[in-house]
Length: 217
Image (cartoon, rainbow, N blue to C red):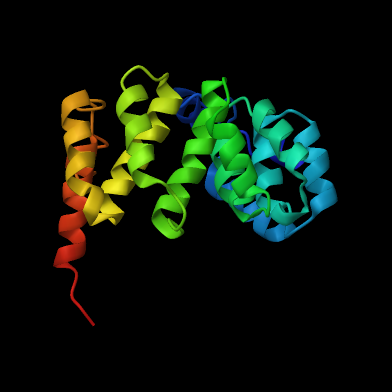
Protein backbone atom coordinates (compact mmCIF):
# COMPACT_ATOMS: atom_id res chain seq x y z
CA UNK A 1 0.00 0.00 0.00
CA UNK A 2 2.94 2.33 0.70
CA UNK A 3 4.36 1.62 -2.76
CA UNK A 4 1.00 2.34 -4.34
CA UNK A 5 0.73 5.59 -2.39
CA UNK A 6 4.19 6.59 -3.66
CA UNK A 7 2.99 6.08 -7.24
CA UNK A 8 0.15 8.59 -6.79
CA UNK A 9 0.24 11.13 -9.63
CA UNK A 10 -2.22 14.07 -9.74
CA UNK A 11 -2.16 14.09 -13.56
CA UNK A 12 -2.98 10.39 -13.69
CA UNK A 13 -5.78 10.90 -11.18
CA UNK A 14 -7.28 13.68 -13.28
CA UNK A 15 -7.31 11.44 -16.37
CA UNK A 16 -8.67 8.45 -14.46
CA UNK A 17 -11.43 10.46 -12.81
CA UNK A 18 -12.71 11.49 -16.24
CA UNK A 19 -13.43 7.80 -16.78
CA UNK A 20 -15.04 7.29 -13.38
CA UNK A 21 -11.99 5.78 -11.68
CA UNK A 22 -10.90 7.13 -8.30
CA UNK A 23 -7.16 6.48 -8.26
CA UNK A 24 -4.01 8.31 -9.32
CA UNK A 25 -1.68 5.49 -10.34
CA UNK A 26 -0.31 5.28 -13.86
CA UNK A 27 -1.42 1.88 -15.18
CA UNK A 28 1.95 1.22 -16.79
CA UNK A 29 3.65 1.60 -13.42
CA UNK A 30 0.96 -0.53 -11.80
CA UNK A 31 1.61 -3.31 -14.31
CA UNK A 32 5.36 -3.05 -13.70
CA UNK A 33 4.76 -3.49 -9.97
CA UNK A 34 2.56 -6.51 -10.66
CA UNK A 35 5.23 -8.03 -12.90
CA UNK A 36 7.74 -7.75 -10.07
CA UNK A 37 5.39 -9.23 -7.49
CA UNK A 38 4.29 -12.08 -9.79
CA UNK A 39 1.38 -14.31 -8.74
CA UNK A 40 0.52 -14.05 -5.04
CA UNK A 41 -3.03 -15.13 -4.26
CA UNK A 42 -2.87 -14.37 -0.54
CA UNK A 43 -1.54 -10.86 -1.15
CA UNK A 44 -4.16 -10.34 -3.85
CA UNK A 45 -6.91 -11.26 -1.39
CA UNK A 46 -5.53 -8.79 1.15
CA UNK A 47 -5.25 -6.01 -1.40
CA UNK A 48 -8.82 -6.56 -2.58
CA UNK A 49 -10.07 -6.34 1.00
CA UNK A 50 -8.68 -2.78 1.37
CA UNK A 51 -11.47 -1.42 -0.89
CA UNK A 52 -8.85 0.85 -2.47
CA UNK A 53 -9.18 1.07 -6.26
CA UNK A 54 -5.46 0.97 -7.10
CA UNK A 55 -4.95 -1.91 -4.66
CA UNK A 56 -7.83 -3.82 -6.21
CA UNK A 57 -6.42 -3.33 -9.71
CA UNK A 58 -3.08 -4.66 -8.51
CA UNK A 59 -4.86 -7.59 -6.85
CA UNK A 60 -6.48 -8.52 -10.16
CA UNK A 61 -3.07 -8.58 -11.86
CA UNK A 62 -1.36 -10.85 -9.31
CA UNK A 63 -4.18 -13.21 -8.34
CA UNK A 64 -4.79 -16.77 -9.55
CA UNK A 65 -8.04 -16.50 -11.55
CA UNK A 66 -8.94 -20.15 -11.13
CA UNK A 67 -8.62 -19.97 -7.33
CA UNK A 68 -11.88 -18.08 -6.78
CA UNK A 69 -15.23 -19.74 -6.12
CA UNK A 70 -18.34 -18.69 -7.97
CA UNK A 71 -19.68 -17.00 -4.82
CA UNK A 72 -16.44 -15.07 -4.33
CA UNK A 73 -16.48 -13.76 -7.91
CA UNK A 74 -20.13 -12.78 -7.63
CA UNK A 75 -19.42 -10.83 -4.44
CA UNK A 76 -16.34 -9.21 -5.99
CA UNK A 77 -18.27 -8.04 -9.03
CA UNK A 78 -20.99 -6.49 -6.91
CA UNK A 79 -18.31 -4.74 -4.83
CA UNK A 80 -16.44 -3.42 -7.89
CA UNK A 81 -17.24 0.28 -7.59
CA UNK A 82 -15.32 1.68 -10.57
CA UNK A 83 -15.37 0.87 -14.29
CA UNK A 84 -11.70 -0.18 -14.50
CA UNK A 85 -11.97 -2.60 -11.57
CA UNK A 86 -15.16 -4.01 -13.09
CA UNK A 87 -13.57 -4.44 -16.53
CA UNK A 88 -10.34 -5.99 -15.26
CA UNK A 89 -12.22 -8.36 -12.96
CA UNK A 90 -14.31 -9.66 -15.87
CA UNK A 91 -11.53 -9.76 -18.46
CA UNK A 92 -8.52 -10.86 -16.40
CA UNK A 93 -10.16 -13.08 -13.81
CA UNK A 94 -13.72 -14.23 -14.53
CA UNK A 95 -13.04 -15.20 -18.16
CA UNK A 96 -10.26 -17.53 -16.95
CA UNK A 97 -12.31 -19.07 -14.13
CA UNK A 98 -14.12 -22.41 -14.49
CA UNK A 99 -17.36 -20.79 -13.27
CA UNK A 100 -17.42 -18.23 -16.10
CA UNK A 101 -20.33 -19.82 -17.98
CA UNK A 102 -22.50 -20.17 -14.87
CA UNK A 103 -21.80 -16.54 -13.99
CA UNK A 104 -22.51 -15.43 -17.57
CA UNK A 105 -25.99 -16.89 -17.40
CA UNK A 106 -26.72 -15.62 -13.91
CA UNK A 107 -25.37 -12.12 -14.42
CA UNK A 108 -27.03 -11.57 -17.80
CA UNK A 109 -30.43 -11.90 -16.12
CA UNK A 110 -29.55 -9.80 -13.05
CA UNK A 111 -31.71 -6.83 -12.17
CA UNK A 112 -28.63 -4.67 -11.53
CA UNK A 113 -27.63 -3.25 -14.94
CA UNK A 114 -23.94 -3.07 -14.00
CA UNK A 115 -23.96 -6.76 -13.05
CA UNK A 116 -25.92 -7.55 -16.21
CA UNK A 117 -23.30 -5.74 -18.27
CA UNK A 118 -20.70 -8.23 -17.01
CA UNK A 119 -22.92 -11.07 -18.20
CA UNK A 120 -23.16 -9.48 -21.62
CA UNK A 121 -19.39 -9.01 -21.73
CA UNK A 122 -18.98 -12.73 -21.14
CA UNK A 123 -21.58 -13.45 -23.82
CA UNK A 124 -19.64 -11.28 -26.27
CA UNK A 125 -16.54 -13.34 -25.50
CA UNK A 126 -18.42 -16.51 -26.39
CA UNK A 127 -19.88 -14.97 -29.55
CA UNK A 128 -16.33 -14.35 -30.74
CA UNK A 129 -14.48 -17.41 -29.45
CA UNK A 130 -16.93 -20.20 -28.58
CA UNK A 131 -20.31 -19.58 -30.21
CA UNK A 132 -21.35 -23.24 -30.24
CA UNK A 133 -24.61 -23.62 -28.33
CA UNK A 134 -25.44 -19.90 -28.31
CA UNK A 135 -28.78 -18.79 -29.75
CA UNK A 136 -27.48 -15.89 -31.81
CA UNK A 137 -30.89 -15.06 -33.27
CA UNK A 138 -32.32 -15.05 -29.75
CA UNK A 139 -29.57 -12.71 -28.56
CA UNK A 140 -30.41 -10.35 -31.41
CA UNK A 141 -34.08 -10.49 -30.35
CA UNK A 142 -33.15 -9.39 -26.82
CA UNK A 143 -30.79 -6.69 -28.08
CA UNK A 144 -33.40 -5.36 -30.49
CA UNK A 145 -35.97 -5.13 -27.69
CA UNK A 146 -33.80 -3.78 -24.88
CA UNK A 147 -30.73 -1.96 -26.24
CA UNK A 148 -32.33 1.42 -26.87
CA UNK A 149 -33.48 1.99 -23.29
CA UNK A 150 -30.71 0.15 -21.42
CA UNK A 151 -28.63 2.12 -18.84
CA UNK A 152 -25.22 3.29 -20.08
CA UNK A 153 -22.89 0.44 -19.03
CA UNK A 154 -25.41 -2.24 -19.98
CA UNK A 155 -26.15 -0.50 -23.26
CA UNK A 156 -22.44 -0.37 -24.09
CA UNK A 157 -22.03 -4.09 -23.36
CA UNK A 158 -25.10 -5.09 -25.37
CA UNK A 159 -24.00 -2.89 -28.26
CA UNK A 160 -20.59 -4.59 -28.22
CA UNK A 161 -22.34 -7.95 -28.43
CA UNK A 162 -24.46 -6.72 -31.34
CA UNK A 163 -21.36 -5.60 -33.22
CA UNK A 164 -19.47 -8.80 -32.49
CA UNK A 165 -22.35 -10.95 -33.80
CA UNK A 166 -22.32 -8.92 -37.02
CA UNK A 167 -18.54 -9.10 -37.35
CA UNK A 168 -18.08 -12.80 -36.58
CA UNK A 169 -21.21 -14.37 -38.06
CA UNK A 170 -22.04 -13.52 -41.70
CA UNK A 171 -25.44 -15.23 -41.53
CA UNK A 172 -26.57 -12.68 -38.93
CA UNK A 173 -24.65 -9.67 -40.28
CA UNK A 174 -27.43 -8.00 -42.24
CA UNK A 175 -29.84 -8.22 -39.32
CA UNK A 176 -27.25 -6.92 -36.85
CA UNK A 177 -26.56 -3.91 -39.08
CA UNK A 178 -30.29 -3.30 -39.57
CA UNK A 179 -30.91 -3.36 -35.81
CA UNK A 180 -28.09 -0.89 -35.28
CA UNK A 181 -29.38 1.42 -38.01
CA UNK A 182 -32.94 1.36 -36.69
CA UNK A 183 -32.04 1.96 -33.03
CA UNK A 184 -29.27 4.51 -33.70
CA UNK A 185 -27.52 3.74 -30.40
CA UNK A 186 -24.10 5.51 -30.16
CA UNK A 187 -24.53 6.89 -33.68
CA UNK A 188 -23.30 10.31 -32.56
CA UNK A 189 -20.66 9.05 -30.12
CA UNK A 190 -17.57 11.30 -30.35
CA UNK A 191 -14.87 9.16 -31.95
CA UNK A 192 -11.23 10.34 -32.09
CA UNK A 193 -9.48 10.40 -35.50
CA UNK A 194 -8.11 7.00 -36.44
CA UNK A 195 -10.51 5.15 -34.13
CA UNK A 196 -13.53 3.09 -35.17
CA UNK A 197 -16.96 4.35 -34.15
CA UNK A 198 -18.85 2.20 -31.61
CA UNK A 199 -22.00 2.69 -33.72
CA UNK A 200 -22.65 -0.95 -34.61
CA UNK A 201 -23.25 -0.60 -38.39
CA UNK A 202 -20.03 1.39 -38.84
CA UNK A 203 -18.09 -0.89 -36.47
CA UNK A 204 -19.25 -4.07 -38.22
CA UNK A 205 -18.62 -2.74 -41.72
CA UNK A 206 -15.14 -1.45 -40.86
CA UNK A 207 -13.98 -4.63 -39.11
CA UNK A 208 -15.26 -6.85 -41.91
CA UNK A 209 -13.51 -4.63 -44.46
CA UNK A 210 -10.22 -4.86 -42.57
CA UNK A 211 -10.41 -8.64 -42.47
CA UNK A 212 -11.13 -8.80 -46.18
CA UNK A 213 -8.13 -6.56 -46.85
CA UNK A 214 -5.77 -8.75 -44.83
CA UNK A 215 -3.34 -10.72 -47.02
CA UNK A 216 -4.00 -14.45 -47.08
CA UNK A 217 -1.20 -16.83 -46.18
